[in-house]
Amino acid sequence: MGEFIRTQTTDHVMHIGLDRGRSNAMHLEMIVELNQELERIKNDPAIEALVLYGNEGFFSSGLDLITLYDYNESTIQLFWENFINLTYTLASLPKPTIASITGHSPAGGCVLAICCDYRIMAAGEYIIGLNEVPVGIVVPTSIFDLYSFWIGRAQAYRNLLEGKLYAPEEALRIGLVDEVVALDRIQTAATRKAKSWTQYDRHAWGATKLNLRRELLLKIAENKTEAIQQVLEQWWRPSTRQILKTIIENLTKKKG
Image: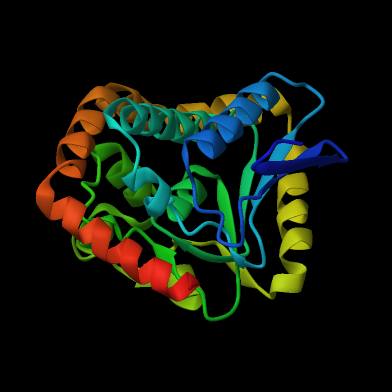
């Protein structure tokens, strides 16, 4: 059990719950904790599959812009390095990974989901998608590759440039999610899917997964330095700071 994630293993399936407030907004410590847990289970033969889930109403709202806004230059650089590392660790896990999307999943929440092998989303008034551009964040090539891996390049291209967000049924239609189920059935459905894959020879399944993702993983690794540089350059621009400041003011008003 960590400070920002909760873990439970049942019948060789590890369930990792994101656990940082209601909306599971991600900051440096949460990212580091999740990455360490994934690294640990990668080599644990007792764990055969992973289900990643959130809170009722929120899988993850993405990055915690309120906290990130106040990071100094070295901390924000560390954050982005760890975030890209997390996408690589999750995308390259040689075991079945299921995203149990228990609610809203924009931006960074969607990134976690598309790193997984299969996505099950709760039915309801929820959104999923990558809306970085409207927030003033540059989308790295590796995130485009991850996104287009599932929905095709033309669709991903259009979506990213306008920061398009989808309701669950629309997300299902374009292949961004694989199933939409009632919230009270989502964990059962996710576990069932995980178990359906663990019946196969573990090595054959894992090696095939990594073969199919080889190009994708290479791009994430090769693009890392350039991606961080681009994101940081944009992050400190006065125009971006102003967008973030406005978003933070609106979020703070809502909380108030």
